[in-house]
Amino acid sequence: MIPNRFEQMKNWLRLLKVVPLAGVAFFVFSASPLVAMERSDLSSKDQARVEAVIRSAQQFSKAEAFENMSGGAATFTGTADRNAFSAHSANLSFKGQERFKLGNGLFRKLWVSSPSSTKASDGLGPLFNARSCQRCHLKDGRGHPPESAEDSAISMFLRLSVPPRTEEERQKIENGELGLIQEPTYGGQFQDMAIPGVPAEGRMTITYEEIPVTLAGGEVVKLRKPTYGVADLAYGPVAEDVMLSPRVAPPMIGLGLLEAIHPADLMRLADPDDKDGDGISGRISWVGKANDQSRQIGRFGWKASTPSVRAQSADAFAGDIGISSPDARRHYGDCTENQKACLDADTGVQKTLGDTEAPDPVLELVAFYSSNLAVPSRRDVQDPEVLKGKALFYGAGCASCHIPKFVTRRDAVQKEHAFQLIWPYTDLLLHDMGDGLADGRPVGSANGREWRTAPLWGIGLTETVSGHTYLLHDGRARNLTEAILWHGGEAEAAKEAFVSMPKSERDALIRFLNSL
Image (cartoon, rainbow, N blue to C red; front, side):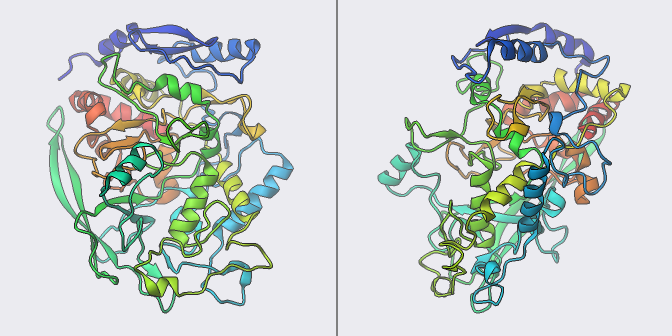
């Protein structure tokens, strides 16, 4: 057992110093390497303001200024009820609110198979996982796996791919020209539903093994270790070297603010070679060809494989619902050349409306809605138990990856996202999370052991909004304690610090997380 958690926290804080970076000061470990990246969006006056906010010492005796406003001026400050994730950014203009509501309608829209009398809704599938965006992102919150063998997966599906099989494929992946190689028959996503006349691909199977973990003081927590498979396959067997990886739908809040974090702030946090020797080597997830000026930082998805909310929305339209859009012109969704019935089906392209099934402004409005779902305000920020838990969170090293705060870029595309102090608790980087969470499936820059640091804002409202407390990329963790205990790799030391805490301190840390 670690004898004195608060003393350890004090020692950890003494390792910190303020280092100026392009006129902006940030907390970093004293041995941390600096990346020569400047925030070109800031004037000298702006730089001084950001420095004053970011360099302010962490406080554990009282809440920091504006700590309750997780999403800056965009924060939703209304009642934290089941609709807490569905409010628009508080600083949206009347015109913006109109666009938000139009996007909300399209987000909830039920798509139908072609041909249909509702021509603007044609194009579902032919293979799909859901008929609407809302079906996966229930109440704009978090999905979860099936709760019993008889239950169907809720807001959960399987990604599929195979390793590169030729030198050309290896080179394309290494150069960023390909993110992955899809499974030849079933594509990149396993789809358990289909329109009439087209067979669904099959069904996902899950079995769990219970693994006991003993915490300080003798408390025993059982973790459930999942094993995934596919059954009732309609198009023949999957490839022998297929790699399966499950996904639950993540919460939708604060996406536009995450996109507005300046690349320089993410670059300075990256330490791919662990030059400071702290055991944490976060990496940027790059999207696009190496050495290409159009290359972007991946921020969204469980492995940070998508650079923008619009790109994420287009991929979801095509992969989840089978709807083509200007940014993903896949009229047949995820169908492959080995699925003839799928490719023979009608598409929903209406020439009078455009050359895709969801022409603009459909994608534009859905992306706007997704970018402007507000982050709820914090609760109980001054509560002594919450403040104690916050100190333990920092002392255990959790804040090394779950970076508490940023100031968004001054030149953000949307003015409501510009120059906001936000508290997302993420670095948006890829980290090796150890064997326990490894899916063995590389995606873009991410290898089979790496995952993007999940934002923690709103995590305490999961049960209120979504009606459950399942966490992590596949919902295996049934609560916050289990989620922490699944951490390994670069997070092993933080996990072990939690394991070694007395129960009263573990409870305080969980209390802090539930306040986010």
